[in-house]
Image (tube, rainbow, N blue to C red; front, side, top):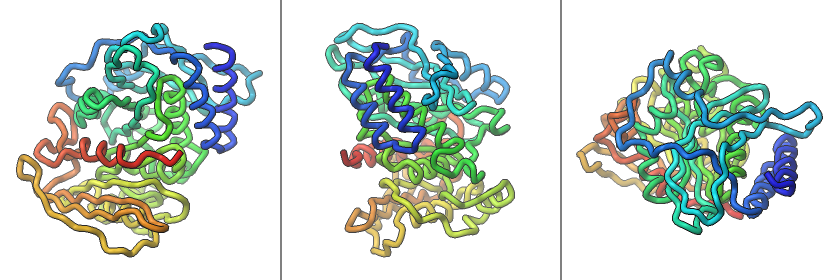
Length: 381
C-alpha cells in the first residue's frame, strides 16, 4: 500500500471511530483515485449451481478458510478502528479483471468475521471504474455460499457489473448463526454488529473500486432485521435497504420478546426517529416463522409520519405466484418505500434457486426487484 493511500485509510478509520461516516466515506473515495486498488488472488468463478448449504459443523470450516491474511493493528496505531486484510497479489493496472469468488477474514472491535466477496468480470481499462456494492446478510442456519446460491444474486452481479459482499455470522456469536438483531447492543450505531458490518463494508469500499453513492444492504429473516438496523444506523453509508421476511428495528430487546415478535408481529411500536434510506420489503403472507405483520411494520417505520395513500397493484410471477405490491413514492419529508406481499409464500426468498435453503423458486424474483430498486436510488452526493 503506498504511503498516501495508507494515510487516507488511517484517516478513514479515525473518522469511522468518531462516528463521522460521511467524512470517512469521502476519505475512502479519495483513496480510490490513487492508482488501481490491490486485489486478492482470484479464485475460479462460482459454478452455475453451487452446492447446498453446509451443516453447522461444516459451516465454520467452510467460510473461515481464507485466501487472504489479516494484518493486525499495532498498539501504537491508536486511531485504528479495524484491521485490514492484506491482498495476496496485486493486479496490473488496466488489465482485464476476471470473475472472482473470494474468501476473506476481517477484524474489528475484538471480533473476526469471515466473508465471501463476489466481483464481476471487468473489461480491460475498466478495473478502476467504481461499481455498486450490495451487502447481503444471510438468515439463521445459513452461510454465505448457501445464501449466494439461493438468492442468485451473483448471477445478476455478473450480468450487471456490481460487487456482492456476504459476511458470515459465527456460531460463537450466535449458536444458530443468526445476526443478533434482538439485542439492544446490536441495534445501535457505533456498537456491536452494526459497527462491525459497517466497518467491513467500508473496508471493501477501500479495497475495491466501489462507488460510495451506490452501496446497498439486503437480508433475509434475521439478516433482513439487521439490514433494517444498518439502514437506520448508517443512512449516509447505505443508499437503500432490502428487507425480506424480516422485522423492524426495535421489535425486540431479548430472546423472549424476539420470539413473541416473530410469532405475533412486533409487540412495541418500532423506532421512527432518525433518517432512513429508501426501503423495499418482501414478506410472504403464509410465513409461519416471522409473522407478515413484521413486514408491514418495517414499511410503517420507514414511512415515518407519512400517511399518504400508496399505489397498490396486483400481479403474478412467471410461475403464477400472486403478489400485492404497494408503492409509496418519495415526496416532501418522506422516503420511497415498496412493499411486496407474497401470497401463499412462507419463510423463503421469493424467486430464489432450490440450490439454496429457504427459497421459493416460483415466486416473483426478489433479487432482481431489489436490484432494480437499489440502482434507482443512489445516495445523494
